[in-house]
Length: 342
Image (tube, rainbow, N blue to C red):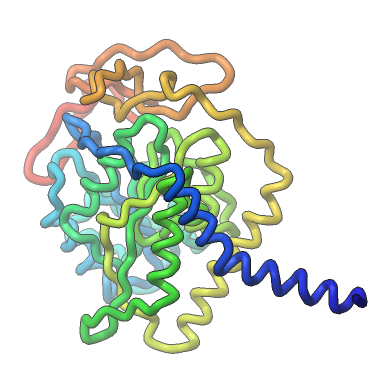
């Protein structure tokens, strides 16, 4: 066999394994191990959540997106809607304010990831949820994402994106359903290798500040996993989004995704992996006591160097981490104000 033939058959074998062998291997291991995802129990009381969207020239969709958060099955006083305008040249900021977003601000044009990093600095939630301005979440989606984070080992969770045409018909093809099936198997066994930027959530202290040239879909769950957390998939948390209207728009979207993916792959060898923490040392969702009777210190990522002492419970009944407002300040929620931690 010549060298060229050998390279050909090895390359062909890798392609077959990637698209057929890998999912079959996941399925076989899942069958051998049995069981499934652990039962989910929503934390009580629910943690504060900041729902963040980075928008660039989204005046046509931002009003609808902010309005879509109104029927969420989540307490309004615990939900903060944050819109960061990534150097928009239209009326995105104006419409976001009129729609009733809690926090609206603008940053110079730097890309989606840079805008999200800036928004995280201003957000106050224990849980950081991320969406796209053209994706609409089902009312129960946020609560389902938060429920998966009640597992103290889980730092990241993504939901399921369903693609629709202009007439509202489902446009999910065979390949998209295949991708969702593989993601479900990965989540059941260990953790997902890629998330979805249109619907995902992360513990505040599990959040990793990414370089602007990286894509959040792949890089965030990858970095969270390296630091000892699980990154999981919750298919019942659903968002819908219209498919790209033209082939050129879809090509541009894929190009952005692949650019971020290659940035993650090329940098992964340079960054050291973090040791996995003991599950008993992981915190709950900032609650005084979880349904599983874990005693919680605060909502933070595992510290592999020297643990800090747990802070004292605040007046509002939540044990605070670094994101809480200062003493005596009050946070304005939609409909009523709630006492801030301090």
